[in-house]
Length: 357
Ligand code: MRU
Image 1 (spheres, helix red, strand yellow):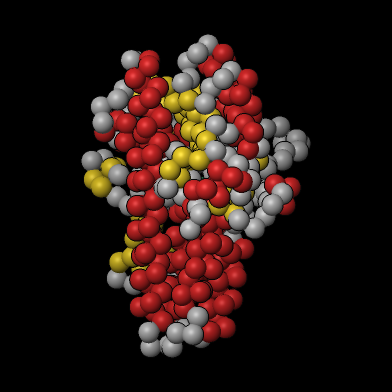
Image 2 (cartoon, rainbow, N blue to C red):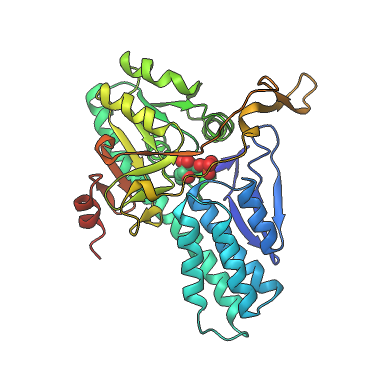
């Protein structure tokens, strides 16, 4: 997708180096950062220079490539794979990508291992791009249906950033929106700011602006009244881990939006590639929910009147704060799951039917 008119992907490999768009610098600075070692990859995931479930999976896959490039000893590769999986707990794509890499590399001799790892990491990225495009084609049908009845701008609410910056290209939640826009359907996006890290304001609104899609940032608590007023036609969000029963783990605050949508008969869709489905955990209580440093709540970063980036404390110095990063929306509040294979009911039967083979 575009930044200042130029096409980008979120991660690429060039001359033995992995290149990423540093998301901690957006929207005020556009910085391409180089990752040269597996430690760099782990650090980029931990500090959220890269973030979003599919993108951290892709970064971990390239992390294995960087590890091998540095030292192709089996023990080092195994330890690196474990460290990568530990770098963030909630998004299942991370483990999915590392497991896929390690399976591909098992029994491969040291002469070939680097080439095979690099090809597999590139394949993970191409596949994600293809899957996200298909999510867009499938989700477009829902937007078209709303438009054909309403014959006016379709208003879509999204939470956090499940845009192309969180994947390799297209995004998950944003892909149907990009497809609708390209087809000439008038769309407008309500962008939840998404405290505390403001991925909605800093990343989703930024990327929609670059693609010239009308959007408005709202405080996270505004969605409810907009739904009551009939100003939201549908919600589409992403997910970090969706269970086989259709329960959806996503950025903190998603659950409250789903409750409001349910109360107001607003369709609530979740868009995801199959790499985000956790077929093993059966009970949402067992999903590891990341708790991040409370400084993310109490400090806010922005630019001052001289265009200088500044970080300021906004809470009373003596206050405690707590920063859970994800919540779980029970399947009963999810209208449907938009995947690369089609749209399914958020239920065991729905997902089983879609992923039969
Ligand atoms: O903490 P983050 O910014 O990595 O959280 C990301 C989200 O919650 C996204 O909605 C999710 O990863 C889906 S990305 C296509």
